[in-house]
Length: 398
Image (cartoon, rainbow, N blue to C red; front, side, top):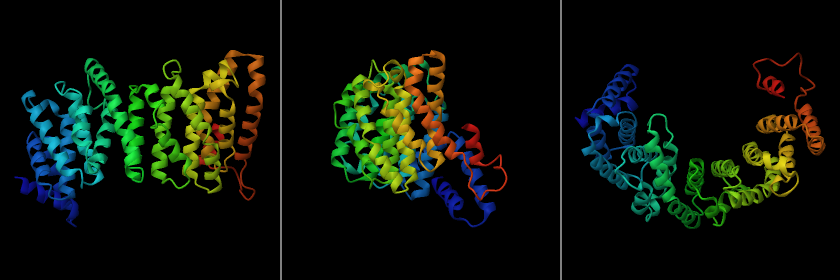
């Protein structure tokens, strides 16, 4: 009965006896693996008794859909969908973020595996997009939906994956409109803003966003504004950084994303001053974020720098940004740029062009000078660095 399950959950979380906890954990694990877990989880979610019980139920539902979907006959798919949507409707406005995540994953994984569920993103936006209290859940499910397309645990077939990507591409404009509305109506809600950036990054990663649509909207400005503002919370700053890096990654396909690439270039170049402010404020986390963005820009536009150094998107100010990061007092910041410098040196070596070598030589000289400073040990250090030490590893990589 559900009462027995609730008692086991209470024992797991609140019983001071370790042996009792272990028995409860083993019993609940067996339940989750059984075919009865579907009905039990559904009933517990309907009851919404407390945080622990609702989390167990949501997590059970998510793992069953992810790993044991074959247990359900196709005739049960529609009722499961309606049940999950109703649970979400009833719970998400006041639920804990951990429950929201599990329910979002459950719905996303269900949508991806049920071919009869057409245009899930559109349906979810229509159902949850009109209430501010539902936005954190809606943004979460719209974030994990593209992420789960390539999930190894779902094992979608190639044909089904292709169908899903096509459907999501068709819903992309709706998602962008929703995200724009969120940036305008929830500008003061940092939790929603971080979710907007995560969601946008997720759709960039799937490769379904039309670059022109985003480049000509105000949406792309939002993560840059967050990174410009020295008062931005670290969690929001990191989400904005991740979003911009995802956009830069797809913008490497310059023929498809020329407008997006130009907008991103201007935005990233404008982050030079905010980076220096983060250095002055000794905010290492934000400095690392800026360095990640600068490095992603350089990685994406490497071929353009080779083809037309100093012109258009081959602008060598990109390298000045990277060298500013290499000069940071913490070597962890410099380390982020290493892969780019390695790639650049490999390209220059293979092309063996006197003209290109002359152009890039001063940048490598500055790089080596900065790295040699980082590699120096403190004056009061005795002996050689321990081989297991991070600093020793850094010196080897240099």
